[in-house]
Image (cartoon, rainbow, N blue to C red; front, top):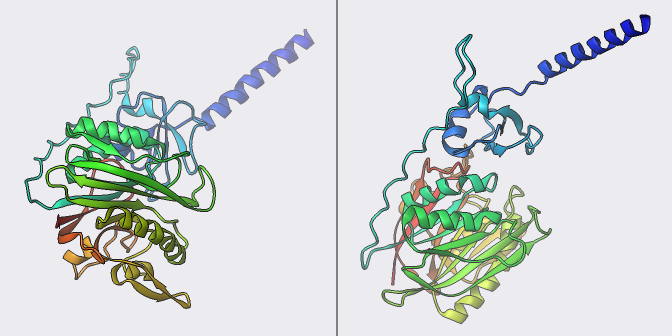
Length: 374
């Protein structure tokens, strides 16, 4: 009897202890967390999985969505119960009900009309932010549709390039195509997307640069495509890239020296003027961007040069405000659309725009530029 009593006490003690642990470690509902409304309407559309991972308030980081286990959070993520945030509470004494379905996302905006003959060509540069991108591909396509470009460079598409392409075709109703990446797709480059019904691809390529291998943030890439307009044969060389982040302007200057050789070689091959689009990870007033506009710059104890010059689509049409923020609350513009000015001239620049509040959940604002190709 004494032994039985001890066993019972130990068992009850174990149950009691477990109960305390469960209560203390309970996963909170997502509806109580910062940015829940944005997560439900933009980042986690269509989620049926039981968990999401919220991020610290004010961090501007996207939630991890479609998570099946509370242990599935990325860095800075904290698990929360998605089902608890989407199901209405059952009245006291009433039987529990099944989870209510998520609200139907709003219909995408209507497809803009096709460009008129002789109209400027719109180019788009947008860092779509790699985290949880597969779940956001549809919303990203809707954002692109709102801008209505003919040619775009999207940065940080990583291994979800094709997801965006498929959604873009569905959302816009147009025939889109994209450049490919050889080998590992998971690094930061500037994949080119273009209206295949308007532009014929003659060739394409990808130049990796920087250190590191697959899944390494130090590995970067330059994408390019030689495109010829189907209506009149006008050609353009399109380049997209994304130099390394958060190390100042020196690595951007160094990267541009590498890219200059590739851009010069392709221009000699095709004899087309260039459009360059990028998240440069450096601001308008930095030496690297001055070099692209003027052909040279003095910085870090030496003179730098570039074999061609460009006009900045946004700054050209907004000379009084050339450096507005394009990422979070940072007081700097790091996203650019450049049109070549010399030695070849792409055409007459017709304006630039920074797109606020596009759907898709990116931490960057998209930038577009219009040019009347000569």
